[in-house]
Length: 613
Image (cartoon, rainbow, N blue to C red; front, side):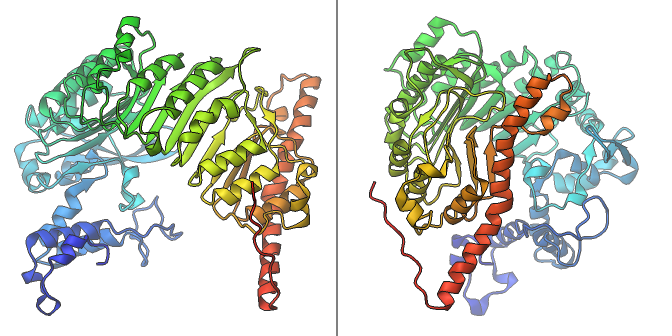
């Protein structure tokens, strides 16, 4: 019971008098709740997720097995174990198992993508007598989540549930609530019965709901289901006016859904978090969100056509927009300046994550520079830990700056940065000196990506950084796990200090897992593997932007000249893969043997060299 909360242990009776009868009901309930969460997180080859057989003797579902045993064997813990078992369900469809067996049927049907799946249907109208057992358990259900979010339930319980289940339940209940104590509702519309799904969903709504999430990629005609979706959202805001978490991310979305989403948002005054991307919201809805002191997380897409007068209201610095925001993610189809304006209006000094995304191509490099400046100069920048800026491609005029030290300098003021991802196909210019500067400013960085994978062509990147920059950033950033930088892997450019000593200068950077090198031209796979094996012994993968040889065979429309060009470039991918996938693991084992032999024979290993940069 070492995982029990401290306050439970603190108020427990003395060990000499500890019996089940002496424990208060609250403590027994918390014991069962903690037991339900136990899960052995490893893959068991004997666990056949596609069969109905029992779990193997060493089941990884220890918590679930224990709770089920308590419901059958312990009179004192029976009620508490039942509460824990039914507290959280992996989907609303599991309520069907509370109905008589003659009310539903299970059939093997074609799966949506491929193969087959087991699907449950209700086959007759429901009557009062069907709900005798249902009422006993319904009051215990507090949360309905997605199956993927509940690993403590075995895969063998995975089922597909036909929309007829919720339709029959709604037909029986009418305007009554199905689960009176439900606080969290996560659902996923599927199939082509969207109208039925949205019409029936309100049977789950009740005043206790604080968290509502609807996502998925449903088939069918969304416009036909629009009116039912609009009514459902209206009933949600009426039934749960104190909703704290609202997420509606169904895709593809239909045009009129945006209006319904905005109307719902404007009626919710206690929101703590909101997620609506890819469905765009209006600036009116955004202004309502800006006024909420309770809002901590904002993840929205802004409508494409923005009225200048409405946007001008966000320029008013006297307004306390988003006073307590912690997480900000903004998306727009074409304009980065619109997102920059909204970012500048955020008065909160508590932001820890900023994510700005534009889906269009050819974003001016000066727009990227403006948003970087806005992030690096804002109040409370010392709290910012994550910065993500995304755009497909960045265009640069003849007099525009490169994406280098001058442009990125404002980000160096974010001293507690943990992740920086400039997911841009653009003119990056990163030198060894700038890598050294970044390493000195961000000692806690775990993910640093400067650039975006784009196999088709180069986008003005200059490959100026060398392995010297890798060594220095390994010394200065011990937590760095993912690095993406335009890199020149020419071993002739490394200084003599690295050639005379071990490449890592005594440093084994165990955190690095993925190295992304863009379109860097590798000539010496053996030399690169030898260098990386000493510096990054735990490196798993290298990603580059060179084409695959298979592209020649897959595309029959290529001319002979195009085929030769692709094969000439693909050789660099082959070399990188050989260096990291084939040679590096072998060299790592050899270096481990060298160190082990030195320790066993009392031979001193060269001490770590401290770099004075």
